Image 1: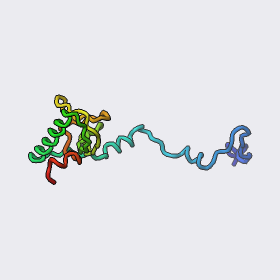
Image 2: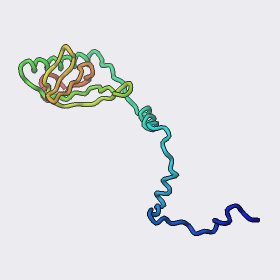
Image 3: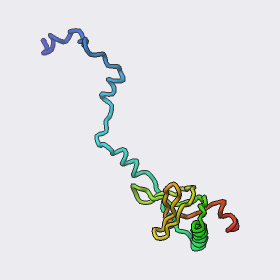
Image 4: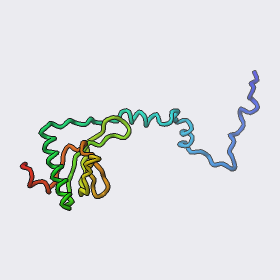
Length: 144
């Protein structure tokens, strides 16, 4: 029985005179999976990323924090620039929630109208997001 391709079946393998031979890795890459849905993996990772919720301070904690803020604002009015560390809730830009982070810097101004604390480097932190203020500068005002 004579086959349809018998005339070319036993010809030598063609080698191109102008193109180099592919490596095994290059040949395998042709058959590797591809991202049919661009951005899908990133969306899955973002959905799985955890964010925390802002805690509610007790009345006593709010009172102490308010006293610290008032002391800092009074010092600013006298021309001082105290260095403080604040722990505050930083809202997530992509989804609900956020995380607590700390920031250390020299206080430049307390904007009471906007309800923010402005630092010399331009960082603005809302008073409502601050849960803790620490500073060597405040040690004389509060008992440990």
